[in-house]
Image (cartoon, rainbow, N blue to C red):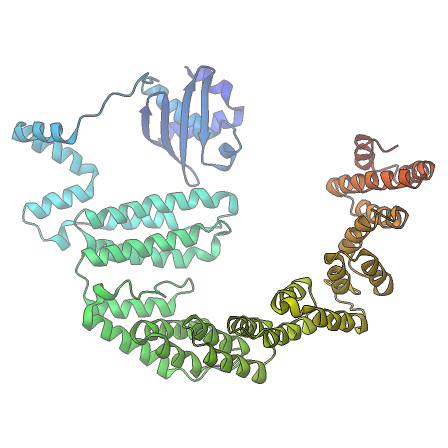
Length: 555
C-alpha cells in the first residue's frame, strides 16, 4: 500500500480534498482490527470510515452520502493517508486480549509511582476519570467535574447555522449520538447530577434547531428519546431536588414544541417521591383549572399540552373514571366523544360507550369512526342488525368498497337484503364529480369485486368511473369480450404517452403489448400494425418512446 494506491482508488477531486483533510488533522481514532482499519473524520459532520484489505486490494466505506454510493470519498482518502503515516500495517490475526482478572492482579502488584503516572496521563484526556480521582482525593463532587467541555461538544454537535437536508441527516444524528454518549457516561461515572443538567441542555439545543433539520427518517425523535432516557437514568442515580425537578418538568413540557416531558408518569414517580409528585400534580391542576373551556377548533399547542398532561395525571392517579371526567369537560367535536367511547370500550363498559357515541353522532358533524365503533360493540353483543344499520349509514355517506365489505361481513347470512338496498342506492345516485371517485366508481368497483363484470361494465357505461377502474374493468372484460377492452387499452396508452416521461413511455408500451394480443384474438392483426404505424408517425420526435416500442417489439 502506498499513496499512489490511494490516489488510484479515488477521483482527483476526492484525493485532493482528502489530502487536505489529512493535513489539517481532521482524522481521529485510527484503529486496526485484523485486516480492517477504522477511523472518524471531522467534515461537515463527523463521518465513520472503514477500510478493509482484501486479496483484490483496498476497499473503502464511509457514512457520507458520496461514500454510501460506493465511491472512495475524501474521508476514505484522509483515513488511508493517516493510516499509511502510522506504518500502514494490518494484523493477520487479532491477538487474544488480556483478561480483567489478570490485569487486576498485575495492577495490584505494580509500582505505585508508575501506576500514579499512568493514571495522571489517562486523566489528562478523560475528564470523568480525573473528576473521580479528584473526588477520591477529597474534592467536592459538584466542583470536581467541569462540564464546559461536554457543553461545548453538545453545542458543536447539535447547533447548525444553515439546514440539514435528508442526505446529511444520518451523519448529523450520528454526531449528536456521539455527543450524548459523553452525557450518558457521566451517569455510571459518578456524576449523575451533572448528567441531569447536561441532558436538559441537550433538549434545549434540540428544540432550537429542530425546524432546520429534515427529519423524514426519524432521527430527531430517536435523539429526543435517548435524551429522555439519559435524563431519567441520571435522576434515578442522582439526587435532584424533587420540588425543583417537578417544576422544571412542567415548565419544559409547556414550553416545548417537540412534546418534551409530556409523558413523565409513571416513569418519574419514584424520582419525584411523594413531595415532588404532589408539587407536579398541584402545578398541572393549576394550569388545567386556569384554562377556560376549550372552544370548537381550538387546537393551540399550549392548550393541547395542558390537556394531555392533565389526562395522563388523572389516569395515573385515578384510573379510567378520573381520565373520563377530565376528557368530558371539553367535548367540542365528534372526535372528543369518540375518544371517551374508545376508553370505555377498552374497559368493557360498552353501554356507556354507546351513549357517548350516540351523543357524538347527534351533536356534531357525523364521523364514520363513531359508527364503526358502535358497529363493533353491537357485533360483540350479537346485535348484527344494529351493527349493519351503522355500517350502512357509513356507506351511504361515503360509498366505498371497504365500507361495502364491512357491511357484508357484519350482516353475514342476512346480507342479501342489504346488498339489494346498497345497489339500489348507488344506481339511483347521480354520478359524482369527485376527482377521487368520479362517475359511479363505487358501484363499478363493488360489482367488479363480486365478479359481476357484465353489470360493472354497464354501470361504467351509464355513469362513468375512474381511469384506473376503467382499465381494471377492461382487463376483466377482455376474458370474454376482447373487442370491448381494446379501445380502453389504446386510450390509456395515449394518456401515458402524453405524460412524456420514460416511465410513462414504458407503461404505454406494456399497454400496447396487451392490446396486441387482444387484436390477434379478434383477427385484427393488420389493424394493430396500422395503429402502431400511425402512432410512430404522430410521435416521431419522441426518441425515448421509439426505444420503448422497439424493445417491446411493437412495429
